[in-house]
Amino acid sequence: MKRTVSAALAALSCLVILSGCGTMKTSWRDTKKLYRSYINTDPTIDFSEQGISDKGLQRLASLLMPVDERLMGLLRVIGSQDTPPESDWAQQLLSSHDWLSGVAVIDTSGAVVSQAPTASLRPLDFSGLLEFADRYKTRKMGAQVKTDEFGTVVMVAAPYFKENEWAGLVVAFFDPRNLVRFSPEPDALVVLSTDGLVWPGGSGQGEALAGLKWAEMLKGGVQGEVASGGGQYVWQARYLGQLEMVYLTDVREARAKKPEPPKAAPVPTPEPSPADVSPTAAPNP
Image (tube, rainbow, N blue to C red; front, side, top):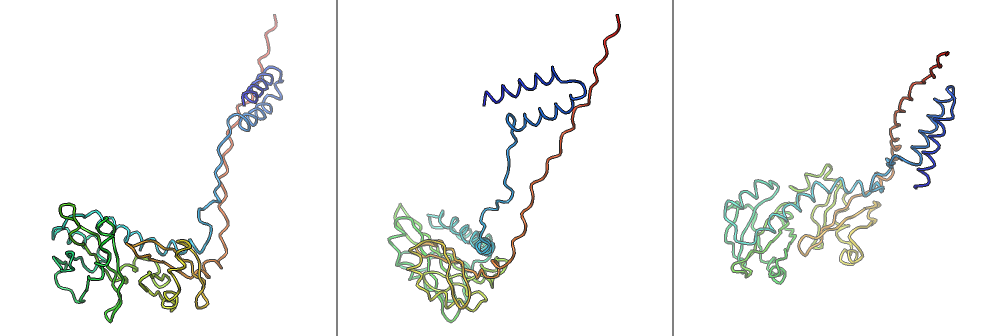
């Protein structure tokens, strides 16, 4: 690098001294080009790189992110409440997460200590969540998906403690229809879990997809593709307590679209060359 710099500067000096007035302008341009090429090189940016290039994965990400972000936000809030919450805490949680159906505080026997709202149109049985007591004692969360004549409900449980001993659960529960509405196209999104179907979407393939051997498929990774009913589904999984939630969408149409031509990098405006200076004739003696 030092040799290149020295050579370039030497070339510049020689050009200044030896060039005639008529070639001064051309020589300056050549020298400036040499300077930019080897001494003060401009960094280049690849404007064609857009991160995920798979149109199918881009499609899935756009559908699931508004849903998943809200769900993960809920986990952070209830996961940080490790003492018995006050009633106003539950009301604040429902206000900030208006897609929730309710919040219940239960003890280790499953008895409801408090609940908001106090009256529920749907009878709920939280006893199934107590099966994960070993998780709660190590401050891990649990979850359950239940479907009955009233529809599907998702329950997420976080443990609370008294004198550092597990004393019960804070359970947030919701109808998945209230959560998937945040997706730009809820009918294009399928949500299932290792407990069963959560949201069937509008393709009519929800039940068939939920019936696949997900316990085996999820051993191989958290992302993949699967064919069902003539569709090609890309899926992404994440943990919800001990459950794995899986988001899927049919990507045939997204991948069939022709990609838009990449935007060209802006062309830099050339700097104006210095004015051509004519030498001043020496006065006659």
